[in-house]
Amino acid sequence: MAQPITGEQHVTRRWTPAADFDGGDMDCGSGLLLSITSAMRRIREGEVLLLHTREPSVLADLPAWARLAGHELLDVLDGGDGRGPWQLPIRRGSPTPPAPRPTFTEGHTVPLGSRLWLYTNFHCNLACSYCCAESSPKATARLMPVEVAAAATREFVAQGGRELLVTGGEPFLHPQLGTLLAQTASQVPVTVLTNAMVFGRGPRRQTLEALDREAVTLQVSLDSAEPDLHDKQRGAGSHAKAMAGISLARDLGFRVRVAATLCPEDAANADALHGALDAIGIEREDRVIRPVAEEGFAGEGVHISLDTVEPEPTLTVDGAWWHPVAVTNPHLKVADTPLPLEQVLDVMRDVLAVQAAGSSQGRSVFRCT
Ligand code: SF4
Image (cartoon, rainbow, N blue to C red):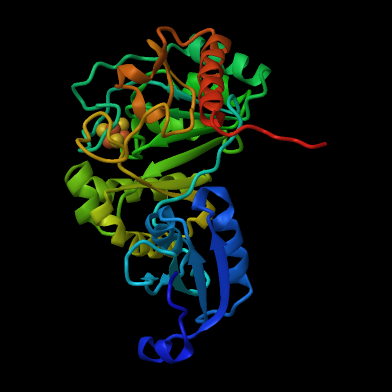
């Protein structure tokens, strides 16, 4: 039998129990955690609950629970022979402090089929170090035909689609982008992801000026408030040209969103970027700061898999994919053709159903009503 802990003994340990709880033979998986959690709520922050237990596994499991719950396990005491019973003083911790504002924009899950991504092409005027699509001036164009884009959008809208995201490569290098956007944006709101560097003059400027301001939003890549980081990742001189593109698009009356891609070591630059965007009047809701994904040219970054990212159906001229950052990943290819979209979505739904069934195994629903 353990020696009773007296107030005098606690003086040297600088704690005195505000309450005792006898856990008996309960282990952490069979009711003890619920009981201590309730007991901890009955003492004040900084006070100590003395847990009595005869169950050896509690000595292994309780420290992790205390750490996660924000409490402090002060000691493990027994009668001197190491065989228990044991007494564990636990100091009630502070409420969990609010999480710091995340650097990266938090997404929220949307119903499958409400958003659709279209890759218009894969070639680009840039060759960014982290490009998930492996785009560059030398990349094969893989142009999305206008009629495929229009048909996919019709099917998408008919099934309840709400938002079309058009990306590449650099979409403004697609020779028929104006027609493609006219035929898609007439059906559903479209956001075009662009580096904003190639539409300043000539035919592409005409394409830009002809776009419907109500139906088309531009999302421009801008990785930093200062040129150094942006140019390091995206090429010398690209920051100044992106800023000029943002300015032009806004002058022409477009809603402009800004997207930054940051490595974890560059995340400290996010505040400066927000300051710069405040200065030019880009609304907070029109900013996204995202991490590099470990896809395409990027050797490291956020791991993308069926299990780790929510699906965002993505069509290219030669297939359909689980997510727009994974269009070079054969493991995340959903279909070998972009159409019919219904078939693409059905495959994704089947995968989600299997995942949901797998995650619910081991815990059953037990209803008494
Ligand atoms: S990240 Fe965008 S701008 Fe850079 S190479 Fe890829 S497609 Fe082009």
